[in-house]
Amino acid sequence: MNKKQLRLKYKKLREALTPDDIEKGSLKIANHLLSLPIWDYSFYHLFLSISEKKEVDTQDILHILQGKDKNIVLSKSDFKSGSLNNYLLTDSTVIKINDWGIPEPVDGIEVPAPKIDVVFIPLLVFDHNGNRIGYGKGFYDKFLSRCTKEVVKVGLSLFPAEDEIQEINEHDVPLDYCVTPEKIYNFKNL
Image (cartoon, rainbow, N blue to C red; front, side, top):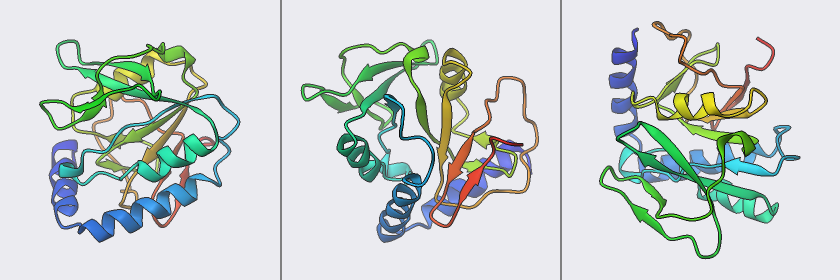
């Protein structure tokens, strides 16, 4: 299937998810994350879930990061440039839902992309080679291209991997891991 077909397929699969499916699957994903070799870093980029799009709920991951006393970085979307501006989550951070339904910080202490060690990445679908498809705007591919080569890229998905995503281009940044409720996929040695 091409990217357009896969987007449609996984949007429909998401629509069928119940709040209980999302809650249980998200908790399993958070628990699986604890076994990944990613906990010796300092700066972790996390997305805040868009509940209307039935994304993985990242609240449990947020609590894990806070419990491990990590620096948590949230992004704010700039739809004019197609880029993400990254801010440190602090006690004074104000979160607002933007016009596209994305919860994001209003402003704060900016964190440059090269300083980020681990990025948790939202996605619609991924394959056995670590390729992923998002919503098609390229925000994460642009953001990841500004990070260091060593940044650890962790996808989060409520569904298992597809065999192969066709139409991968040079701007698509592959994952190092993808965590689902059932399994951890490791792409670092492909």
